Length: 90
Image (tube, rainbow, N blue to C red; front, side, top):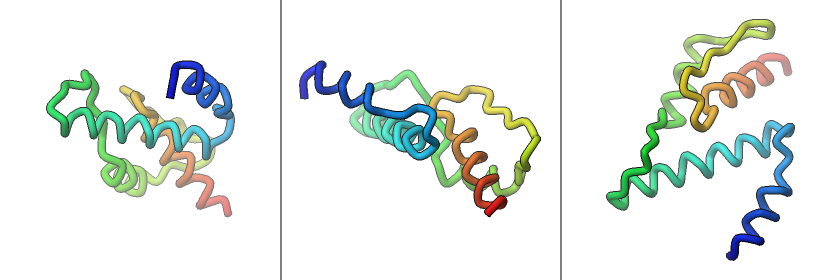
């Protein structure tokens, strides 16, 4: 892919859509993981998604509460908290 393709792809993402945002977050985390495995230093650290899900389940955020994601690199805590709350509302 060239730069134009990448820009068009990113431009097609609806950042107001929770599912699109989740996909972007997953891609970002996957890139960090790959860079780390290849011996490169990504300069970023992230909490693995299974740990994030466990922490969100334990905290059990509810509608109207504030969710604090202190580093929000991939917004994993915010995304998983949103999904958790939406599942509880269904």
